Image 1 (cartoon, helix red, strand yellow):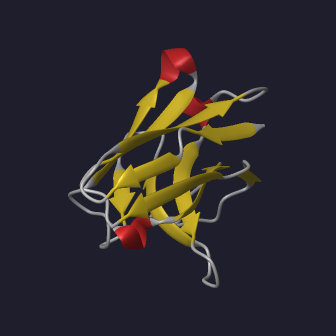
Image 2: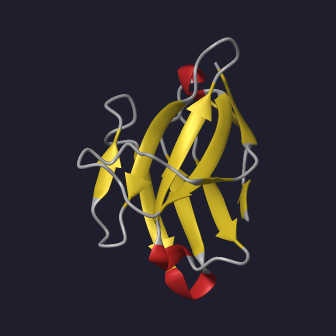
Length: 120
């Protein structure tokens, strides 16, 4: 089971760090991704990290967001800096046994989301 946490309300330009913790699974055995879904929009991938540590970032967040692993804590983090109002969404984490070459999926296991709201 995956659990995303760390969401909240922040002003534009601010930062948040999201956490994806796992129970019953060892995250180091999986690729992990972060997705987001804004109201009325489809769920989009934000970033992913392979077991090797190789990463993928959507163009909209590259240079502002950083995904990382803490295997000792069995947790994957998403550091979000320079947040913009358009980053407002529910953020989800997911795990995959095998990713396609571009790092965008498919993901097998999903957690509940955490709300991120960026005010202007």
